[in-house]
Image 1 (cartoon, rainbow, N blue to C red):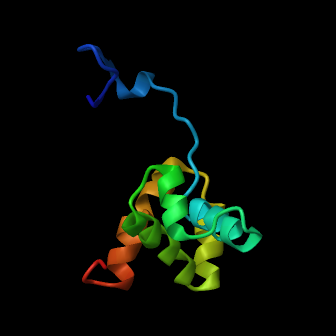
Image 2 (cartoon, helix red, strand yellow):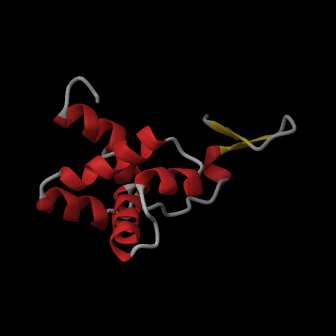
Length: 101
């Protein structure tokens, strides 16, 4: 049985945790691209600071926008958590660039 930790030494079986629908990380890249285009953010560094991420991490996510349009559309349409994990940004990065950069 898989458990999820809730802190203070308490753990609950994973099947008792509500499966909250997630969005693929490409939605963040699209949002950030829109912020840059609209002038809501002046740079990727500014976005990184706002999000509490490194500039490198923001760049990695933004690189998803370089994928072919049909792949981006597919990823943006995912609404099943298992499918989203199957097509994670990290896995896509390694598929399209074996060095992972």
